[in-house]
Each structure stands twice: as structure tokens, then as C-alpha cells.
Amino acid sequence: MSNWFETLEGLHIQVWDTLIQGLVDAGHPARRPTFATVSPDNWPEARTVVLRGSDTEAGIVSVYSDLHSDKIRSLKKNPRAALHIWDPAQALQIRLKTEVTIASGPAVRPLWENIPAQSRQSYGVSPAPGRPIPDALDYIKNAYPDTFAVLHCRIITIDVVHLGDDHRRASYSRSDDWAGKWLSP
Ligand SMILES: Cc1cc2nc3c(=O)[nH]c(=O)nc-3n(C[C@H](O)[C@H](O)[C@H](O)COP(=O)(O)O)c2cc1C
Image: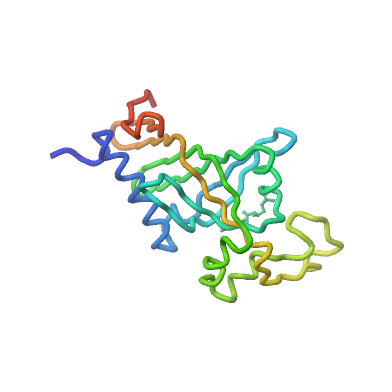
């Protein structure tokens, strides 16, 4: 019997198991991926986010954000994002290239209702995120549903690196139904 990292199918399953671990375990590295976009003036930009949802069948992961944050401006211009996870316990790097749909307003109200009151304050800071303020604490955190956004990230490709005794790298793509292929690491 082979180890999970020795087959394309095993690695692919491990990617999704890892993403699901990130959803259920607040301490898991997959809980806080790096989320990268391209700014309107073509700069790469990256930030930490919390993984909030995943749909294995549809190949979608979801992230929450403030509708007025810079990443939303970037995504409106270029609706593509990359997510990056490094899980040292599994020696596993996961990179996802995704196409992002921004959902807000009534469509996401049921998700808003499920967010604990304390956490809702993350989606409604005033002035808007990234705006200059006179002093460090010159802002107010509001729990404001109208500025709550859900970023549905439809995965186009998955790139996985496993750094075991041997190094393995594989790529999976939606266009070939996630069959996968080995790449030189
Ligand atoms: C541990 C951690 C988790 C975070 N989670 C989120 C998140 O889920 N969504 C979000 O929009 N920002 C999150 N942030 C804040 C972002 O990293 C970033 O500072 C903020 O979204 C503004 O980014 P932008 O100006 O590029 O849009 C988190 C930051 C840290 C340190």
C-alpha cells in the first residue's frame, strides 16, 4: 500500500482533507491562507485571511472580507486570486489559482447571521480599511452587514509540493477534471 503523497490521487485527496482541516480546526495552518491578488496598478499584493468555506464537489473555497477593503477593489478589476498554504506537519505546500466572485447584500445575509456578534465587527470598520487616520486608534469597528462580503474562489488549478525524503510536485487542473500530472519540483 502506498503513502498518500506517492500517487496523484492520494495527493489530491490530501489537498482537500487539508482544506477541510483548516475549516474545522482553528489552529491548523490551512485556517489562515495567504490570499494574493493583483492591484489595479498591477502590483502583486498578499495578505492573511481566514478560510471560511469549502465545496469539494464544486472546487470552491470561500473567504470573508470587508466590502470596502483594497482587495475588493483589486478583484473588481481583476477577479483572480491565488491562495497559499504551508503545512509544516505534513511538509505540504498548497497553491490555488482561483477566479473570484464577490457576494454581498441579501445573498450573504444567512452567513452574516451565523457570525458571532464579536466577530461581525471585522466587517464594517470606519473609515474604510486602508484609509489614513490621524492616530493609531482613530477608527470605529461597526458590525455592519452591508459591508460584509463573501469571496467565492473557484479553483482553476492546484499546485502541490510535498517535501518528504523525496520531493514531489503535482499540478491539477479543472480543465482535465483534476486528473493531475507530476511536475519537476
Ligand atoms: C490572522 C489574520 C487573519 C485575517 N483574516 C482576514 C479575513 O478573513 N478577511 C480579511 O478580509 N482580512 C483578514 N485579515 C486582515 C488582512 O490580512 C488585511 O490586513 C486586510 O484584509 C486588508 O487587506 P487589503 O487592504 O489588502 O484588502 C486577517 C489578518 C490576520 C493577521
